[in-house]
Length: 347
Image (tube, rainbow, N blue to C red):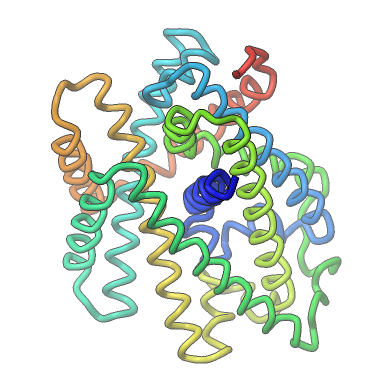
């Protein structure tokens, strides 16, 4: 029993580490998807939490029933052979783009905050990622089991500081933060669709490996509640300080800087850790997908994938990715709808 719950917590940590990335830690993702809707953000967070629990579990159980080798097997089950393969190839391009952006972000963290050349940051991140992913899913579980509690701790620190602020929750239902209320109805579905469509690269191999229904269900519950809790706490923190950080590119960093140097340093470490966990998870998923088409040793595919991402990180792939991501958003919503209505028994 204890081993089952421990494994569920590992699943939850990996799930959370994949979803809660650099966009979350900067605060921009929370503002765009939640905080700008004022009081309606609470509804959006609640719905998103339920969807992360239900659909995360459904993906893992479908993977277990299909004995899926990669996310392509799941997409073929959902959409059929031709469309499923096309979506998987498009996802591969987007995932490579996301990985290249994560690498570029890691280099920027080294250069802008630690005064270390970005090239060194890129190389350190590539090497560390290579040695983690080549050890397999267990090593990725282990990394996230360390990083995710640090993320939660940092979120708690900022939240407790916000509680003591005189303007705590002042902006929650204020006209200063506003957006059409009807958009709040759609935002949790968009947020979950974008995140789960990418996270399936990790959730599918988890389901295939673990298989046990109860362990996967508990892992999805822990993860969904964890994501919902972290988003809620970040939301309350941001709306409390909204008057101070509304013009900042990295709102959470602005809040951290007001608390003290130690907290700000911790914030930078969290940013890098979230970039790293997202990168590791996506490289692992991309490699599983690629291995179905290329008959090369897995370790070599890891190396080649990282090398491609390393090159893309230097050639401004961000602009191309922003275009691809808009298309990916529409595909993700269609993917989410099919997943919701997919009725094949996952046992």
